[in-house]
Amino acid sequence: MIVDPGGCGLAQEIERVLASVPPELEGQVKPELLQSVLEIATKPCADVAAAGRELVSLRRAVNGILEELGLGVAASGTHPFARWEEQLVVERRRYQELADELGYIARRELIFGTHVHVAVEGADRAIYVSDGIRLFIPLLLALSANSPFWRGRPTGLASARTPIFRPFPRCGVPPHYGDWKTYCERVELMMRAGAIEDYTYMWWDVRPHPNLGTVETRVFDQQTRLDHTVALTALTASLAHAFSAQFDAGRPSVDFPIELIDDNKIRAALRGLEGELIDFLHRKRVAAPEMALALLDELADHAAELGCSAELEGVRDLVEGGTGSRRQLEIWDREGDLVQLMRRIVEASRA
Image (cartoon, rainbow, N blue to C red; front, side, top):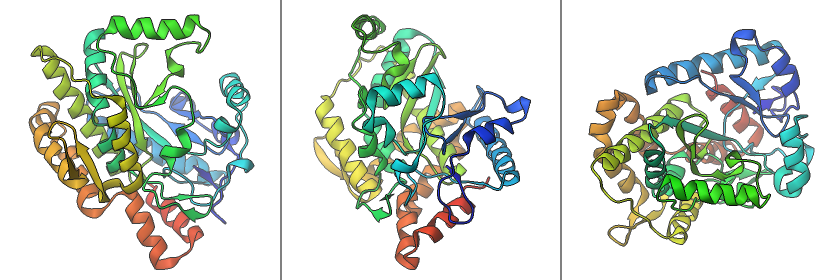
């Protein structure tokens, strides 16, 4: 979020920011749909630790650029009191066309997320990994929940970002594709029908990204603290590694009905880690923290092989110390002031 440090409201200043970005950061500081939003992106990194270091460097650089412009930066799944009606769409063809096509649906998309790309070798392997991570979308959302406020009100949700994005077409829980051939046939059908220009207009919570050779997990609310971003990155990479190993072992891909996964996702959006999720394999409800800690144990060897065991341990801080949503609500309960909450978010968003 690009914010005015005075009242901590959103500032429509992405073009001024981009004009101030030094040449060495071109392509890593980018616009998004709205002029009050900026995106930072690492280059491909060899491991999670390197990605974390680059995120620190990028966020420091962005903080410095904005401070020189008299602005601030803040990271959260939603702005607690901003209104979408006051936001301007960036002057880029893709985004202007998107706003024209989807109208209200696109213009109210005043939300902020994190996308984690993991390189995966081979097309069928990428589909297998995507199908596997699909089953964990609800738990990943529960861990990342960081948007309890919307338009100046507590919503009662841990992730208000989730229902705000839900009306978009081709978003949410993806189909189970099974193999690369099926994925290609379904994407090409939509392209031939004129529904989409290319696969990048399919905004699933997890998707293969053939142009980059990655599997991209997109379900996360934006994290205020960078150590939480890095922890969720380690979790995603470890999941991808685990499913890659299952692919090599010849284990069949498991397909659970989309309605079951979506039901779990809504549970996660409502309560975050403070509710229960359905354990599909054992057909019972389980406390979300219990499910998260069990997954950490299952992924320990994969994290060790990837060299991200320390980063993966950061997930325990979300389980034991509370998600970003819980921390925001605790500040609100103490102080009852959303401007003060935003000041805390701005401060915590510094690298």
